[in-house]
Length: 297
Image (tube, rainbow, N blue to C red):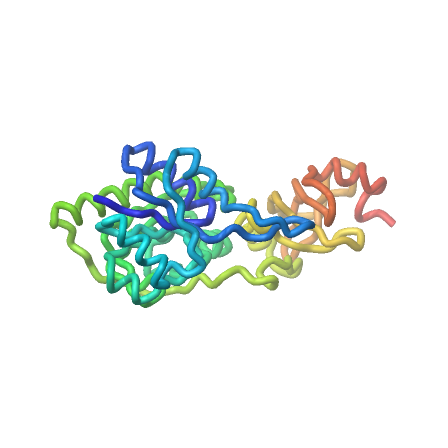
């Protein structure tokens, strides 16, 4: 089928690469406009834009994809369907009235509808994730299901690894849905089960509460790695925790190689961290750089 692919986040870039590898390249890639980044606020393109241009694909970057000019550009491509994956824009009714649209959502809806399904699932300690291809409606991830695939992830996987493991299911799901739409054999089915909402990650979600269980803290760290980072304060500085493991029993004795911090039950072995204005380091590198052993007077 003739389709355009809309996406912005790293997951969308991976799915696009998978579709191209499966000889199912879109006619165009739609992504968000370049955004100011860095100390000088220089506009930087989304990574998916660069990936698309490297493959010779046209790129559209409308501020609002449903506004008349952007919609006219899409319709001029003589599309049969609009595929949306981690795009970061609301698709307006004007586009939905003009063009069939499907959305690739990295959860088994109706569980974890919304902006941060993988992160919320990992925070909840879940290992059974999945990908659903939905017919897009004006409700958030509420449309009928065209394809759904369960994906198991290791209990120590972070969000980056989880998204990578979801890509094959996403690609296969999109291809199966497009094939079924083209052949007229696809049967859309209504969602079943209790709906849960995966709200956007907030500053409060990033802050580590050391009164929580060690397992809950480690799940939080995994869910926010490598794109966001779980936040705490160490030696008076804002610090991101990137890798950690849960421990039980007595807190290990302080030393210059191990950073074990007490939690509500047990303790958390901090394995990799990053203080404000510095790069990511191991616990040993951090402690040697600090010139002290945490936990000693």
